[in-house]
Image (cartoon, rainbow, N blue to C red; front, side, top):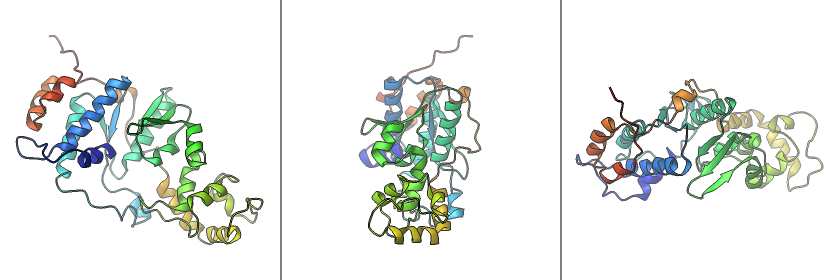
Length: 285
């Protein structure tokens, strides 16, 4: 979804289909997929879409409430992004009431458990919590990779502590509330001496030896608002058990089907890009 929005804002509104529909997001998104295929030569690949309202809105109705509505001329392009994904031989995934992040986490965790090396192509900081021995994050725009050491270097915490970090200092992008007075630096200091927010609940003071301004007052605020902090952590935690079937066969990259691509590209007005799509060998009867 992130790359679709990027393409929409980056490419001109003069890219239209013969029907007059704007197709700049579809074209830019397709080019992103083709670049991944060309550069990485994946054996397995999936593109993940949003499945509608998230279960997180039940936990916290204001979740993502500050985001701007989707532009009207982008909405119809989503279906065509899904169609072009399937047509070029890439699995297209989504799950009702779960966000794309959850489906990505589920697919990554299950493929890693099968022994595969997984690359998540994303610039979203939330993805860093999924990093493990077999899972890395690649930001195409910056051409940077994140492994476990990279997550620690960038965020100052381990991958597993990312939800706690966001629960403490909040996330304005997703409208996740944090603890008043706790910025990212303070949250890092707290998590440097404990595993997570539950370590702050008891009578002990795990960061008694750590000195920062307002330390005792901040600990008091965390403890008094612990249920809200726990909710924030739930909002920030990617669910890796979305109800979706994931297997090597489902995610196998199959290359393009010319019988589907030709009419679809004609409908979209994509003539030149058709030559860049790797095609499956035709079935002989």
